[in-house]
Length: 174
Image (cartoon, rainbow, N blue to C red; front, side):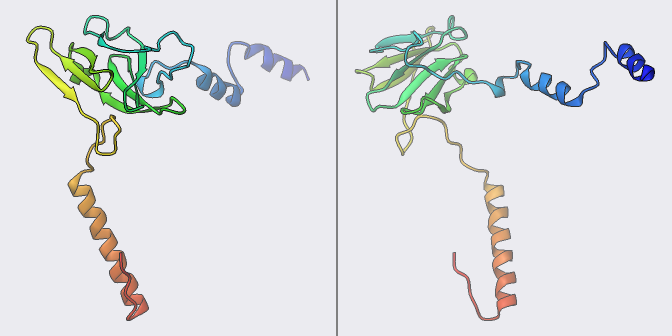
């Protein structure tokens, strides 16, 4: 019994409970940008009722937090120096529309009764229109790597040939 007390006293400065150590790691706030996203709230004070004109510019882009409904019902917002698309129902982030590097100190403007988002370079007045995707969403959907698609197709063909050999005349169609 005395030995247990001595061990506990000697370990006062050490965390000997591995579960407690894991919990502290989980509860510790992270500064890693991949693990956080602003989620708009109905009464957060950041909602732009009728966005028209300049929404944000390079000077205030990093601090600016705002969100709005486009004419088509899509929800966009500025957060952490980038434009984000949010789900119209849950307001959960869907993806990045324009990242920090692409914005590159340009102004974000909403024009034509919230129908068009444009980026304008304040020094050259060069303008870029942010077009929606074919499905109406705005967030960037990058094409999958061609080599990866070819490798997947080759694996699918190998699997199909293997099954055909195992099953004889049975042919599988994709």
